[in-house]
Image (cartoon, rainbow, N blue to C red; front, top):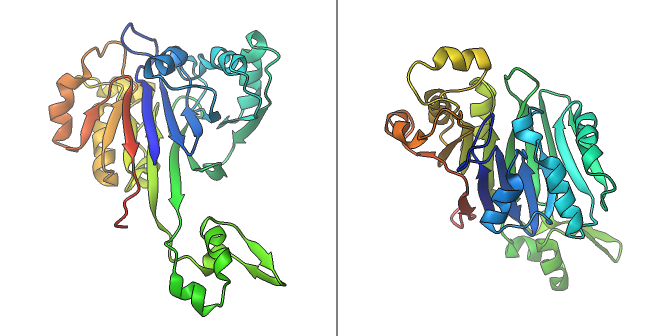
Length: 304
């Protein structure tokens, strides 16, 4: 299972009813955060989720509305007696930016590990998460992220028997353990069938619509995409500021065909994004004008 909460849906500045950009994922006792705008701590408190289990924070880019909440969050995690290392992922310059912010959050009781992205596309695995980062098109270097939870194949009794694998090892192999016994190496692949469909969430914000977004969002369980503007006549401004309109996001979703798309990162001037949703759904019907705190529990499909 993968829990997703869109903690903040605002761009540029927080509003009384809308915190700045942040999304949290939870799986197997580990939490992953994407962006940490102003108000992220309050949004977590309102949701009732703890910051202490956050093991990874991914940053799309270093504009203040995506990272200004970090020092306070780190201090809160430290005050919660966290001691495990925290991994931070983001574009080149990550360590320099975070070190500057941490001037007001010194002497943390846990180590910060930095992974700086330098390629157009990069992939890594941390805990239960496979993290794919891909460069998008904003005024500064910016990445989108796809978060996947892989799922192994089913236990294949006949394969285990045909290879004379001792029954006492079956459970450990099924859980992914490699075992050496009596000079023989047994691997999980020896008792498992083909990998099954896992879970996949794609998140992008602060970008023009570029093909790589649809490529990574293809067949996602959830596609969270920036919709800075919903009003008519904002197309030129979106191009100038390198953001997206609702309708550009919907066209990406139509191409990618995720199960659902949530719009986020609204302009402060856009006070009622839901007013434009009918027109957006003409392009991609499974669109939600998300609000702060919107949550979903994604489950594995036992039929696949």
